[in-house]
Length: 88
Image 1: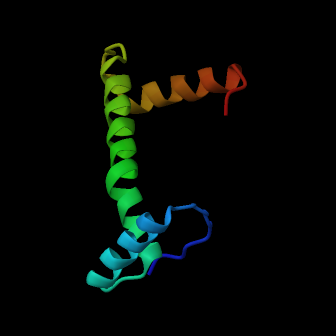
Image 2: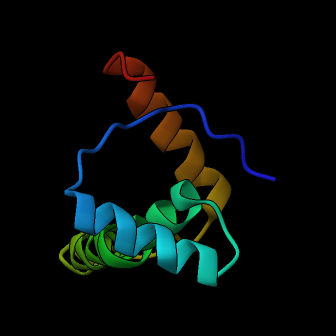
């Protein structure tokens, strides 16, 4: 089960609250769970989809490089280069 750690407060009109409470009761879940589900479905899935699309675009925009003939030689050169430039 998820552990909810952050609290958000939202103000609703009387009608919004009443309608959402009725929906929550129909679905036999707490109002908070209904609102979390709505946020997940409407905004968070959309955000994750957007983030994935950006990651794919970033990967596709990388310049093509040759695969090393001998991985161990390449790794040695890479680590030497990394150490000489103070990275890591």
